[in-house]
Image 1 (cartoon, rainbow, N blue to C red):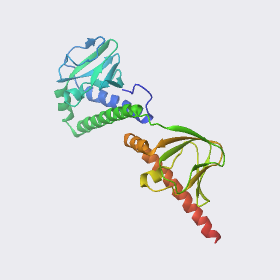
Image 2: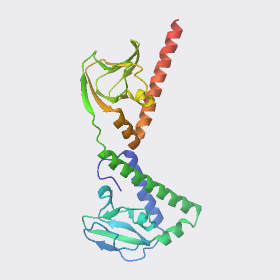
Image 3: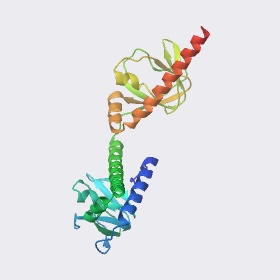
Image 4: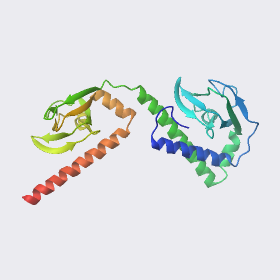
Length: 263
């Protein structure tokens, strides 16, 4: 199971865990029928019973949600579980010949209840599947989100953000170096790929510091409304911001200690 485009290492690992979990669960079960061979179809399970789940044993399938391609599935992946549980509004399809091996959902659930170990395996499988599908859908939403961001270029010495002004944009430094200045005193450095200017957006205050290009810089600017929408769609951005803010605080503490030792 993988996304139709580039995916993170975390999702790759999650997909591998899901396939391994499927293998362990089905290794104790016997198929309830002969393998089913299907040709090109936009709805693989339209004529199949919801009392069964299906292991892909040959070929590749895809999963669409709301008409959008969300996932691709390979040999060793299990399909039909969400439909059998009445949870899915999407459809599985294939563009090629596909072989599915049917297993009884009732037998699978009975197996999961046989021991704490099997119950744990089943729970792990459901959690992994849920996380993967949610991540896939979230990535599709993010792919559609196209903020009206603008590229800006600054020469060394030019001001990117002016202290005291309204916080109407969040910036990412793509190339070059910049410095943060509070009342004319340097309080930090900003390097390539770093997001800056977000704190004032979140606190709805005016800029607490200026940012000045220390070299020729290229910056990506995103309007605050669109940045907040982007954070809603990709909350892990906040983790990076918190880490960067923590590093800035540590840097300021070190500067204060250095000044106190000189006093």
